[in-house]
Image 1 (cartoon, rainbow, N blue to C red):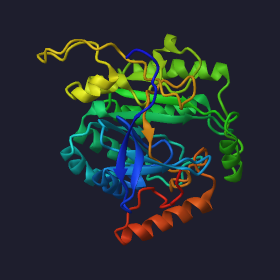
Image 2 (cartoon, rainbow, N blue to C red):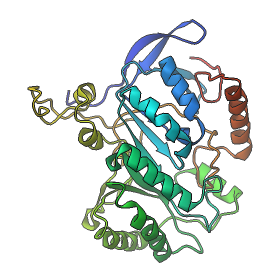
Image 3 (cartoon, rainbow, N blue to C red):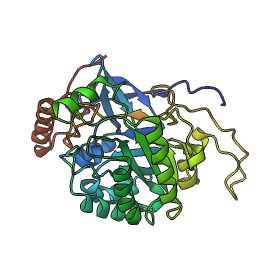
Length: 350
């Protein structure tokens, strides 16, 4: 059980057309790195959960893969605006599948970098509402990406983070931050240029260290666990650990009584009173993520070019027109009560 993650089990499912299919059966679902499912596709997600499977289309080769929820024991929601999904939380709780939110809450309104999201005040209020509903350990504040520009300095950024953190620190236990990486992602660079935001830039090393020192000072009053997502630099001297957005440690803290999930993760010892013997920790590093990424394995079910937030730095959108086209077609089907197995309704198969 201590070797590298070797992939998910497979099961057989019957699809919406009555055809028998091979499907992955992941224990952990990511919903989603590729789009904001809680903001735009919550109804689709709940319908597919009831249907016991969804499908995912590989953005690089167009191949369709089926994903069964038969063995799912944790769902990780990524969102910048989960407010539309709040109405589904009681239904999700009834299914007794553990879940938590990675809530990205940035402040780039002056730069116009996130044109499709609600106001900062609304998003802060939603964060607090979700925290009060599910518990502050199950809502993680992400500030992602951290970026600078011709008009945004390190001090400016720290001031904005201070304003947000002063409202949030009573309502979460964790903050995950991520420095923007423009050089490695041509689509990010193209999207920024297309949006007229050429002044957005990465941190120099000195700026990174100055920022981390400032954040450490802020966190002296907050007491959050802070980690850096996908960062090679060792920032532990500033109280910042290596990031793990899809986190086995969080799941062990928040969902210790889910025996199936604990068995998958590898529990460090018996749950008190259960009499179970200790199971060694497993090496569950997600092989599909960057080397510096600390996330454990999960299966993402999102779709590229579907997120209507239209963030200028996004790596998952190919431009405004494909996103609007995909979302318009999704709404037309949803209004007719049609929720196909993929978000976009595409039918490509293996």
